[in-house]
Image (cartoon, rainbow, N blue to C red):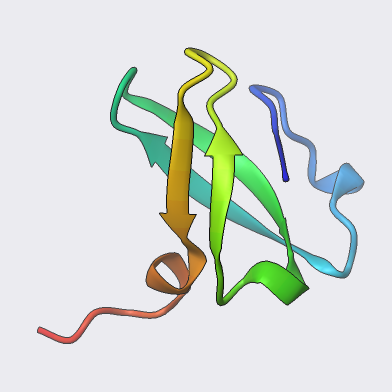
Length: 67
């Protein structure tokens, strides 16, 4: 996984999905490139602003919640 404040879609591989993750510690939104093989897993993301480690359930980001 990679994150950057100036993430470019030119660097996104066809086998990756761009996801946005919110760091609750420093209130930063991270653009994270996730391999398609990990889209239904829980992944660890390090915030590039505060270096906090986030455990992110990618399935929760991709699938809508039932209301």
